[in-house]
Image (cartoon, rainbow, N blue to C red):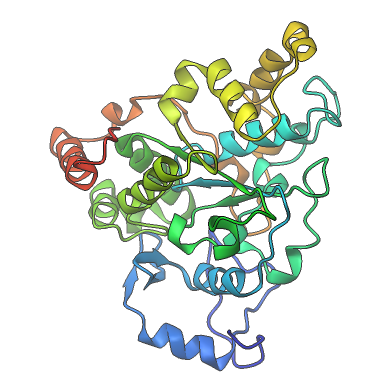
Length: 340
């Protein structure tokens, strides 16, 4: 187990992931561990480290290790897992609204989503300090907390992923066409770095080699796909494109999986459509909270809503780029039964 943070500081991680409490101080043990890990520069020009097969900034590596050591689940905790820029904000909004609909009706003029970014309501597990686990309260039931995560299935705390009669933790995984995911990621990058220091081609090269936070995306997707096949009662696998095409069907599926199916009365009252409307891309994008300010990690709120369209990659990728991503996807998913 890692020692408490007592020794010399490393350089703070720059935007878009600023440290929460100013200067980050790590134990010598953690600093020694980092020195042994493969290191590359990501699209932000920042050091990322390969840990358990995936690439992460130092902040995420540290918090990941802390979660493995300190995280204790509650009976009905919910984990919303995604690759970066694949519908994370939307998924957080929908699940938060579904699970809290008894205390925060979707038509409530004071609903938290109207004034608070979904990433503040549903924080990322790997960006929390371990002292924050117990204080998180974002569900109407004390036995339930809702966490977001870009972690691969194998890196989630074992207490979450292993079968345990005492816990009924649920994992929802949302994936998206890799080409659209990449384009969304590229726009996120250029919102946070000097555009003259990067290019579509440069970001594409790094992304296609998996050199981005939580990458390679294909390996993450396959990990959750396999888990969903082996334990469908614990892991729900959803495609972004299905959410766009049939939001009512997928929202019902989510509610049922999370043990909170809509009642006949709720169905008759139009509750489902109200939830979908509140969490819709156009509605959330036009909220004041989505246009200004930053999250506590320094990420600009206006970077979470761009187009949200399926197939938007056609406006940005060359035929060669699209073909390359499709080729990698086919090879990575070969024989799995999954197609994107």
